[in-house]
Length: 489
Image (cartoon, rainbow, N blue to C red; front, side, top):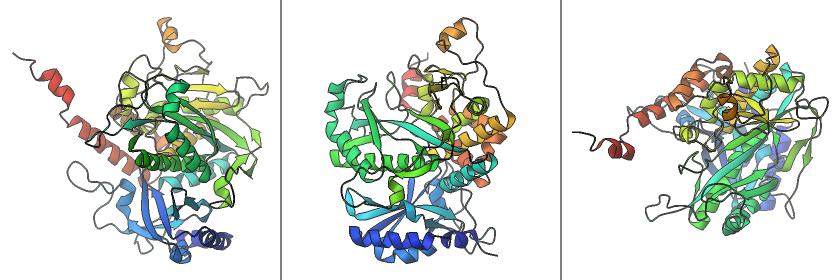
Protein backbone atom coordinates (compact mmCIF):
# COMPACT_ATOMS: atom_id res chain seq x y z
CA UNK A 1 0.00 0.00 0.00
CA UNK A 2 1.42 3.40 -0.99
CA UNK A 3 2.13 5.66 1.98
CA UNK A 4 0.71 9.17 2.16
CA UNK A 5 4.23 10.60 2.39
CA UNK A 6 5.29 8.94 -0.87
CA UNK A 7 2.10 9.90 -2.68
CA UNK A 8 2.62 13.49 -1.56
CA UNK A 9 6.28 13.57 -2.55
CA UNK A 10 5.48 12.20 -6.02
CA UNK A 11 2.34 14.29 -6.62
CA UNK A 12 1.77 15.34 -10.25
CA UNK A 13 3.66 18.50 -11.10
CA UNK A 14 5.80 18.46 -7.95
CA UNK A 15 8.95 17.40 -9.80
CA UNK A 16 8.63 20.53 -11.96
CA UNK A 17 8.31 22.68 -8.83
CA UNK A 18 11.41 21.07 -7.34
CA UNK A 19 13.37 21.91 -10.47
CA UNK A 20 12.03 25.47 -10.39
CA UNK A 21 13.25 25.86 -6.80
CA UNK A 22 16.71 24.68 -7.89
CA UNK A 23 16.74 27.40 -10.51
CA UNK A 24 15.84 29.95 -7.82
CA UNK A 25 18.55 28.61 -5.49
CA UNK A 26 21.19 29.00 -8.17
CA UNK A 27 19.99 32.39 -9.43
CA UNK A 28 19.71 33.86 -5.91
CA UNK A 29 22.91 32.17 -4.65
CA UNK A 30 21.11 30.63 -1.68
CA UNK A 31 23.39 28.43 0.45
CA UNK A 32 21.02 27.23 3.20
CA UNK A 33 17.34 26.37 3.50
CA UNK A 34 15.20 26.42 6.63
CA UNK A 35 12.71 23.54 6.51
CA UNK A 36 10.00 24.75 8.86
CA UNK A 37 6.80 23.34 10.30
CA UNK A 38 4.38 24.72 12.89
CA UNK A 39 3.99 23.61 16.51
CA UNK A 40 0.74 23.35 18.47
CA UNK A 41 1.19 26.95 19.69
CA UNK A 42 2.07 28.40 16.27
CA UNK A 43 5.82 28.47 16.89
CA UNK A 44 8.10 27.93 13.88
CA UNK A 45 10.09 24.70 14.24
CA UNK A 46 12.40 22.77 11.94
CA UNK A 47 15.96 22.37 10.68
CA UNK A 48 18.39 23.99 8.27
CA UNK A 49 20.30 22.16 5.55
CA UNK A 50 22.70 23.18 2.78
CA UNK A 51 20.91 24.10 -0.43
CA UNK A 52 23.14 21.63 -2.26
CA UNK A 53 20.94 18.86 -0.80
CA UNK A 54 17.65 20.40 -1.96
CA UNK A 55 16.57 17.64 -4.35
CA UNK A 56 17.18 14.87 -1.83
CA UNK A 57 15.47 16.80 0.99
CA UNK A 58 12.53 17.64 -1.25
CA UNK A 59 11.80 13.95 -1.74
CA UNK A 60 12.71 12.33 1.56
CA UNK A 61 12.09 15.32 3.83
CA UNK A 62 13.73 16.23 7.11
CA UNK A 63 13.34 14.15 10.25
CA UNK A 64 12.93 15.51 13.78
CA UNK A 65 11.49 14.08 16.96
CA UNK A 66 7.70 14.22 17.21
CA UNK A 67 8.00 16.45 20.28
CA UNK A 68 8.88 19.39 18.05
CA UNK A 69 5.13 19.72 17.57
CA UNK A 70 4.82 20.52 21.29
CA UNK A 71 7.89 22.82 21.37
CA UNK A 72 10.08 20.09 22.97
CA UNK A 73 8.89 21.10 26.44
CA UNK A 74 8.08 19.13 29.61
CA UNK A 75 4.92 19.35 31.69
CA UNK A 76 4.85 20.33 35.37
CA UNK A 77 5.80 16.79 36.38
CA UNK A 78 8.84 16.81 34.10
CA UNK A 79 7.42 14.46 31.48
CA UNK A 80 7.61 15.56 27.87
CA UNK A 81 4.37 17.03 26.55
CA UNK A 82 2.46 15.13 23.90
CA UNK A 83 5.00 12.44 23.08
CA UNK A 84 7.15 9.93 24.94
CA UNK A 85 10.93 10.23 24.83
CA UNK A 86 11.12 7.07 22.72
CA UNK A 87 8.62 8.32 20.12
CA UNK A 88 9.67 8.09 16.48
CA UNK A 89 10.78 10.95 14.25
CA UNK A 90 8.36 12.79 12.04
CA UNK A 91 8.96 13.38 8.34
CA UNK A 92 8.53 16.97 7.13
CA UNK A 93 8.17 17.16 3.34
CA UNK A 94 8.77 20.67 1.94
CA UNK A 95 6.11 22.42 -0.10
CA UNK A 96 8.20 23.85 -2.98
CA UNK A 97 5.66 26.57 -3.80
CA UNK A 98 6.44 28.26 -0.44
CA UNK A 99 10.19 28.65 -1.10
CA UNK A 100 11.39 32.23 -0.45
CA UNK A 101 14.73 33.88 0.20
CA UNK A 102 15.17 35.67 3.55
CA UNK A 103 15.68 39.37 2.77
CA UNK A 104 17.77 39.95 5.91
CA UNK A 105 20.06 36.96 5.19
CA UNK A 106 20.15 36.36 1.46
CA UNK A 107 22.33 33.29 1.81
CA UNK A 108 19.29 31.57 3.37
CA UNK A 109 15.74 30.75 2.30
CA UNK A 110 12.75 29.16 3.96
CA UNK A 111 10.20 26.59 2.88
CA UNK A 112 7.09 25.41 4.76
CA UNK A 113 6.63 21.68 5.23
CA UNK A 114 3.77 19.20 5.52
CA UNK A 115 4.30 16.67 8.30
CA UNK A 116 3.92 12.88 8.23
CA UNK A 117 4.35 10.04 10.69
CA UNK A 118 7.64 8.21 10.37
CA UNK A 119 7.87 5.79 7.47
CA UNK A 120 8.77 2.93 9.82
CA UNK A 121 5.94 3.50 12.33
CA UNK A 122 4.02 0.34 13.25
CA UNK A 123 0.79 2.36 13.30
CA UNK A 124 0.01 4.69 10.38
CA UNK A 125 3.47 4.47 8.74
CA UNK A 126 4.07 7.49 6.53
CA UNK A 127 0.50 8.79 7.01
CA UNK A 128 -0.44 12.45 7.27
CA UNK A 129 0.31 13.45 10.86
CA UNK A 130 -2.86 14.50 12.66
CA UNK A 131 -0.89 16.72 15.01
CA UNK A 132 0.37 18.88 12.12
CA UNK A 133 -1.86 21.96 12.44
CA UNK A 134 -0.82 23.39 9.07
CA UNK A 135 -1.47 20.18 7.16
CA UNK A 136 -4.71 19.76 9.06
CA UNK A 137 -5.95 23.19 7.91
CA UNK A 138 -5.30 22.25 4.30
CA UNK A 139 -7.26 19.00 4.70
CA UNK A 140 -10.13 20.64 6.64
CA UNK A 141 -10.44 23.41 4.06
CA UNK A 142 -10.42 20.93 1.17
CA UNK A 143 -13.22 18.92 2.82
CA UNK A 144 -15.21 22.13 3.40
CA UNK A 145 -14.89 22.96 -0.30
CA UNK A 146 -15.93 19.43 -1.30
CA UNK A 147 -18.96 19.53 1.01
CA UNK A 148 -20.15 22.98 -0.12
CA UNK A 149 -19.70 22.95 -3.89
CA UNK A 150 -16.34 24.75 -3.98
CA UNK A 151 -17.11 27.30 -1.27
CA UNK A 152 -13.82 28.44 0.25
CA UNK A 153 -12.67 30.72 3.05
CA UNK A 154 -10.64 33.87 2.59
CA UNK A 155 -9.22 35.58 5.66
CA UNK A 156 -7.63 38.92 6.42
CA UNK A 157 -6.14 39.41 9.88
CA UNK A 158 -5.26 42.53 11.85
CA UNK A 159 -1.97 41.71 13.61
CA UNK A 160 -1.47 44.12 16.49
CA UNK A 161 1.73 43.82 18.49
CA UNK A 162 3.89 45.93 20.82
CA UNK A 163 7.46 47.10 20.21
CA UNK A 164 8.97 47.37 23.68
CA UNK A 165 12.29 48.67 24.95
CA UNK A 166 14.72 46.01 26.14
CA UNK A 167 16.06 46.52 29.65
CA UNK A 168 19.50 45.56 30.89
CA UNK A 169 18.09 42.21 32.02
CA UNK A 170 16.65 41.53 28.56
CA UNK A 171 13.10 42.01 29.81
CA UNK A 172 10.61 44.71 28.68
CA UNK A 173 11.29 48.23 29.91
CA UNK A 174 8.33 50.24 28.68
CA UNK A 175 7.43 51.28 25.17
CA UNK A 176 9.25 53.79 22.95
CA UNK A 177 6.01 55.68 22.21
CA UNK A 178 2.98 56.99 24.10
CA UNK A 179 -0.42 55.29 24.25
CA UNK A 180 -2.01 57.50 21.60
CA UNK A 181 -4.02 55.80 18.84
CA UNK A 182 -3.67 57.04 15.24
CA UNK A 183 -1.19 59.77 16.17
CA UNK A 184 1.17 60.16 13.21
CA UNK A 185 3.77 61.75 15.51
CA UNK A 186 3.95 58.59 17.63
CA UNK A 187 3.85 56.39 14.54
CA UNK A 188 6.82 58.31 13.13
CA UNK A 189 8.89 57.53 16.23
CA UNK A 190 8.87 53.90 15.09
CA UNK A 191 9.40 54.71 11.40
CA UNK A 192 12.78 52.90 11.17
CA UNK A 193 11.08 49.80 12.60
CA UNK A 194 7.90 49.71 10.56
CA UNK A 195 9.65 50.63 7.32
CA UNK A 196 12.07 47.74 7.72
CA UNK A 197 9.20 45.36 8.50
CA UNK A 198 7.36 46.51 5.37
CA UNK A 199 10.46 46.17 3.17
CA UNK A 200 11.06 42.62 4.40
CA UNK A 201 7.36 41.78 4.12
CA UNK A 202 7.16 42.88 0.48
CA UNK A 203 10.22 40.77 -0.29
CA UNK A 204 8.42 37.72 1.14
CA UNK A 205 5.10 38.11 -0.64
CA UNK A 206 3.02 40.10 1.88
CA UNK A 207 1.03 42.81 0.14
CA UNK A 208 1.19 45.46 2.88
CA UNK A 209 -1.73 47.89 2.78
CA UNK A 210 -2.47 49.99 5.93
CA UNK A 211 -0.56 50.86 9.10
CA UNK A 212 -1.17 52.86 12.27
CA UNK A 213 -0.17 53.46 15.85
CA UNK A 214 -2.63 51.83 18.25
CA UNK A 215 -3.76 52.55 21.81
CA UNK A 216 -0.83 51.16 23.83
CA UNK A 217 2.84 52.16 24.19
CA UNK A 218 4.81 50.93 21.20
CA UNK A 219 1.73 49.25 19.71
CA UNK A 220 1.47 49.10 15.91
CA UNK A 221 -0.94 47.45 13.52
CA UNK A 222 0.62 46.64 10.15
CA UNK A 223 -1.90 45.03 7.81
CA UNK A 224 -1.52 42.94 4.69
CA UNK A 225 -4.05 41.88 2.05
CA UNK A 226 -6.46 39.02 2.69
CA UNK A 227 -6.18 35.74 0.81
CA UNK A 228 -6.99 32.04 0.90
CA UNK A 229 -6.98 30.97 4.55
CA UNK A 230 -3.81 28.81 4.38
CA UNK A 231 -1.82 31.52 2.64
CA UNK A 232 -2.97 34.08 5.22
CA UNK A 233 -1.87 31.78 8.05
CA UNK A 234 1.53 31.31 6.38
CA UNK A 235 1.86 35.07 5.91
CA UNK A 236 0.99 35.80 9.54
CA UNK A 237 3.68 33.31 10.56
CA UNK A 238 6.12 35.00 8.17
CA UNK A 239 5.13 38.42 9.54
CA UNK A 240 5.99 37.26 13.06
CA UNK A 241 9.38 35.98 11.91
CA UNK A 242 10.04 39.31 10.21
CA UNK A 243 9.12 41.27 13.35
CA UNK A 244 11.40 39.12 15.48
CA UNK A 245 14.28 39.83 13.08
CA UNK A 246 13.63 43.59 13.00
CA UNK A 247 13.50 43.62 16.81
CA UNK A 248 16.95 42.01 16.89
CA UNK A 249 18.27 44.66 14.52
CA UNK A 250 16.89 47.52 16.66
CA UNK A 251 17.52 46.01 20.12
CA UNK A 252 13.79 45.99 20.84
CA UNK A 253 11.34 43.29 21.90
CA UNK A 254 8.67 42.27 19.38
CA UNK A 255 5.91 41.43 21.85
CA UNK A 256 2.92 39.33 20.74
CA UNK A 257 1.49 38.80 24.24
CA UNK A 258 -2.22 39.52 24.29
CA UNK A 259 -1.98 41.83 27.30
CA UNK A 260 1.54 42.99 28.18
CA UNK A 261 0.29 46.18 29.88
CA UNK A 262 -2.94 46.51 31.88
CA UNK A 263 -5.10 49.60 31.53
CA UNK A 264 -4.43 50.01 27.80
CA UNK A 265 -5.62 48.12 24.75
CA UNK A 266 -4.49 44.54 24.22
CA UNK A 267 -2.81 43.05 21.17
CA UNK A 268 -5.69 41.65 19.14
CA UNK A 269 -5.62 39.77 15.86
CA UNK A 270 -9.14 40.20 14.51
CA UNK A 271 -9.98 37.79 11.68
CA UNK A 272 -12.05 39.21 8.80
CA UNK A 273 -13.65 36.36 6.89
CA UNK A 274 -15.62 35.88 3.70
CA UNK A 275 -16.81 32.80 1.79
CA UNK A 276 -16.22 32.61 -1.96
CA UNK A 277 -16.70 30.48 -5.03
CA UNK A 278 -14.39 30.75 -8.01
CA UNK A 279 -11.60 33.25 -8.47
CA UNK A 280 -8.03 32.68 -9.55
CA UNK A 281 -4.48 33.21 -8.37
CA UNK A 282 -3.05 36.46 -9.64
CA UNK A 283 0.36 38.01 -9.08
CA UNK A 284 0.75 40.85 -6.61
CA UNK A 285 4.39 41.75 -7.20
CA UNK A 286 5.98 44.59 -5.27
CA UNK A 287 9.67 43.79 -5.58
CA UNK A 288 12.27 45.06 -8.01
CA UNK A 289 14.05 42.63 -10.31
CA UNK A 290 13.62 38.87 -10.21
CA UNK A 291 11.27 37.40 -7.62
CA UNK A 292 13.21 36.21 -4.53
CA UNK A 293 11.03 33.12 -4.30
CA UNK A 294 8.45 31.00 -6.07
CA UNK A 295 5.71 32.85 -7.94
CA UNK A 296 2.92 31.44 -5.76
CA UNK A 297 4.44 33.21 -2.71
CA UNK A 298 3.60 36.49 -4.46
CA UNK A 299 0.13 35.45 -5.69
CA UNK A 300 -3.29 36.11 -4.15
CA UNK A 301 -6.66 34.51 -4.81
CA UNK A 302 -8.76 37.24 -6.42
CA UNK A 303 -12.13 37.52 -8.12
CA UNK A 304 -15.01 35.07 -7.92
CA UNK A 305 -18.35 35.37 -6.13
CA UNK A 306 -18.51 36.47 -2.50
CA UNK A 307 -21.30 34.31 -1.04
CA UNK A 308 -21.20 36.23 2.21
CA UNK A 309 -22.65 39.25 0.42
CA UNK A 310 -26.40 39.81 0.54
CA UNK A 311 -28.46 40.29 -2.60
CA UNK A 312 -28.90 44.02 -1.98
CA UNK A 313 -25.16 44.55 -1.45
CA UNK A 314 -26.02 46.22 1.85
CA UNK A 315 -24.80 45.31 5.32
CA UNK A 316 -27.12 42.33 5.79
CA UNK A 317 -25.29 39.15 4.73
CA UNK A 318 -26.89 36.65 2.39
CA UNK A 319 -28.20 33.25 3.60
CA UNK A 320 -24.78 31.55 3.57
CA UNK A 321 -23.24 34.45 5.47
CA UNK A 322 -26.02 34.48 8.06
CA UNK A 323 -25.77 30.73 8.59
CA UNK A 324 -21.97 31.02 8.91
CA UNK A 325 -22.45 33.71 11.59
CA UNK A 326 -24.99 31.46 13.28
CA UNK A 327 -22.44 28.64 13.38
CA UNK A 328 -19.74 30.82 14.87
CA UNK A 329 -22.21 32.21 17.43
CA UNK A 330 -23.25 28.65 18.38
CA UNK A 331 -19.64 27.64 19.07
CA UNK A 332 -18.17 30.87 20.49
CA UNK A 333 -17.27 29.46 23.93
CA UNK A 334 -15.21 26.63 22.43
CA UNK A 335 -13.67 28.88 19.77
CA UNK A 336 -12.50 31.19 22.55
CA UNK A 337 -10.12 28.50 23.81
CA UNK A 338 -8.32 28.66 20.45
CA UNK A 339 -8.61 32.36 19.61
CA UNK A 340 -7.68 33.40 23.16
CA UNK A 341 -5.15 30.66 23.70
CA UNK A 342 -3.11 31.68 26.75
CA UNK A 343 -3.67 32.53 30.40
CA UNK A 344 -2.61 36.08 29.55
CA UNK A 345 -5.41 36.30 26.96
CA UNK A 346 -7.96 36.55 29.76
CA UNK A 347 -6.30 39.67 31.15
CA UNK A 348 -7.69 41.20 27.93
CA UNK A 349 -11.15 39.81 28.65
CA UNK A 350 -11.17 41.20 32.20
CA UNK A 351 -9.72 44.69 31.61
CA UNK A 352 -12.95 46.69 31.57
CA UNK A 353 -13.81 49.61 29.32
CA UNK A 354 -11.48 48.71 26.45
CA UNK A 355 -13.93 47.09 24.01
CA UNK A 356 -12.79 43.56 24.77
CA UNK A 357 -15.13 41.22 22.82
CA UNK A 358 -16.59 39.38 25.80
CA UNK A 359 -20.26 39.07 24.81
CA UNK A 360 -21.70 36.55 22.35
CA UNK A 361 -23.60 38.77 19.95
CA UNK A 362 -23.18 40.30 16.52
CA UNK A 363 -23.97 43.53 14.70
CA UNK A 364 -22.93 45.94 11.96
CA UNK A 365 -19.77 47.85 12.86
CA UNK A 366 -20.46 46.99 16.52
CA UNK A 367 -17.13 46.83 18.33
CA UNK A 368 -18.72 45.82 21.63
CA UNK A 369 -19.70 42.34 20.41
CA UNK A 370 -17.66 39.24 19.62
CA UNK A 371 -18.71 39.32 15.96
CA UNK A 372 -19.37 42.24 13.66
CA UNK A 373 -20.04 42.71 9.99
CA UNK A 374 -17.08 45.00 9.43
CA UNK A 375 -18.08 45.81 5.82
CA UNK A 376 -20.66 44.47 3.38
CA UNK A 377 -19.47 41.00 2.44
CA UNK A 378 -17.32 40.07 5.40
CA UNK A 379 -17.49 39.11 9.08
CA UNK A 380 -14.95 40.09 11.75
CA UNK A 381 -14.28 37.59 14.51
CA UNK A 382 -12.95 39.65 17.42
CA UNK A 383 -12.32 37.16 20.25
CA UNK A 384 -8.86 36.36 18.94
CA UNK A 385 -5.53 37.87 19.98
CA UNK A 386 -1.94 38.12 18.81
CA UNK A 387 -0.88 34.81 20.37
CA UNK A 388 -3.27 32.78 18.21
CA UNK A 389 -2.17 29.76 16.20
CA UNK A 390 -3.79 30.86 12.91
CA UNK A 391 -3.89 27.33 11.49
CA UNK A 392 -5.92 25.99 14.42
CA UNK A 393 -8.11 29.09 14.43
CA UNK A 394 -9.01 28.81 10.76
CA UNK A 395 -9.74 25.09 11.02
CA UNK A 396 -11.99 25.66 14.05
CA UNK A 397 -13.83 28.53 12.35
CA UNK A 398 -14.36 26.35 9.27
CA UNK A 399 -15.85 23.67 11.51
CA UNK A 400 -18.21 26.16 13.14
CA UNK A 401 -19.27 27.71 9.81
CA UNK A 402 -19.77 24.28 8.28
CA UNK A 403 -22.12 23.43 11.16
CA UNK A 404 -24.01 26.70 10.73
CA UNK A 405 -24.42 26.28 6.97
CA UNK A 406 -25.36 22.60 7.20
CA UNK A 407 -27.93 23.14 9.97
CA UNK A 408 -29.02 26.57 8.65
CA UNK A 409 -28.47 28.17 12.06
CA UNK A 410 -30.09 31.57 12.60
CA UNK A 411 -27.83 34.12 14.37
CA UNK A 412 -30.79 36.32 15.32
CA UNK A 413 -31.14 40.01 14.58
CA UNK A 414 -27.97 42.14 14.49
CA UNK A 415 -27.48 44.22 17.64
CA UNK A 416 -26.82 47.85 16.73
CA UNK A 417 -26.75 49.21 20.27
CA UNK A 418 -23.69 49.28 22.47
CA UNK A 419 -23.98 45.82 24.01
CA UNK A 420 -23.60 47.20 27.53
CA UNK A 421 -26.49 49.61 26.97
CA UNK A 422 -28.55 46.81 25.44
CA UNK A 423 -27.94 44.65 28.52
CA UNK A 424 -28.88 47.51 30.83
CA UNK A 425 -32.12 47.73 28.84
CA UNK A 426 -32.80 44.07 29.64
CA UNK A 427 -31.24 42.10 26.81
CA UNK A 428 -29.94 38.68 27.86
CA UNK A 429 -26.53 38.00 26.36
CA UNK A 430 -24.16 35.15 27.12
CA UNK A 431 -20.65 36.06 28.22
CA UNK A 432 -17.60 34.36 26.74
CA UNK A 433 -15.49 32.33 29.19
CA UNK A 434 -13.88 34.53 31.84
CA UNK A 435 -10.89 32.29 32.48
CA UNK A 436 -8.71 30.00 30.41
CA UNK A 437 -9.79 26.87 32.28
CA UNK A 438 -13.45 27.64 31.54
CA UNK A 439 -12.66 28.06 27.84
CA UNK A 440 -10.80 24.74 27.75
CA UNK A 441 -13.82 23.08 29.38
CA UNK A 442 -16.09 24.61 26.74
CA UNK A 443 -13.83 23.25 24.01
CA UNK A 444 -13.81 19.81 25.60
CA UNK A 445 -17.63 19.78 25.48
CA UNK A 446 -17.93 20.93 21.85
CA UNK A 447 -17.73 17.99 19.46
CA UNK A 448 -18.05 20.18 16.35
CA UNK A 449 -15.01 22.33 17.07
CA UNK A 450 -13.04 19.34 18.35
CA UNK A 451 -13.75 17.57 15.05
CA UNK A 452 -11.83 20.37 13.30
CA UNK A 453 -8.82 19.28 15.39
CA UNK A 454 -9.09 15.58 14.53
CA UNK A 455 -7.27 12.59 15.92
CA UNK A 456 -4.55 13.50 18.42
CA UNK A 457 -4.45 17.17 17.39
CA UNK A 458 -7.12 18.12 19.92
CA UNK A 459 -5.57 15.84 22.54
CA UNK A 460 -2.13 17.40 22.46
CA UNK A 461 -3.61 20.91 22.35
CA UNK A 462 -5.67 20.16 25.45
CA UNK A 463 -2.71 18.53 27.19
CA UNK A 464 -0.40 21.43 26.42
CA UNK A 465 -2.88 24.12 27.42
CA UNK A 466 -4.14 22.35 30.57
CA UNK A 467 -0.53 22.16 31.71
CA UNK A 468 -0.18 25.90 31.04
CA UNK A 469 -3.32 26.63 33.07
CA UNK A 470 -2.14 24.38 35.91
CA UNK A 471 1.27 26.05 35.95
CA UNK A 472 -0.38 29.44 36.31
CA UNK A 473 -2.58 28.28 39.17
CA UNK A 474 0.41 26.67 40.90
CA UNK A 475 2.47 29.87 40.80
CA UNK A 476 2.80 32.39 43.65
CA UNK A 477 3.00 35.80 41.98
CA UNK A 478 3.75 39.38 42.99
CA UNK A 479 -0.01 39.84 43.24
CA UNK A 480 -0.21 37.14 45.92
CA UNK A 481 2.49 38.82 47.97
CA UNK A 482 0.95 42.30 47.69
CA UNK A 483 -2.52 40.99 48.50
CA UNK A 484 -1.81 38.58 51.34
CA UNK A 485 1.61 39.31 52.90
CA UNK A 486 0.12 41.40 55.73
CA UNK A 487 -3.54 40.37 55.63
CA UNK A 488 -3.39 38.99 59.20
CA UNK A 489 -3.59 39.47 62.11
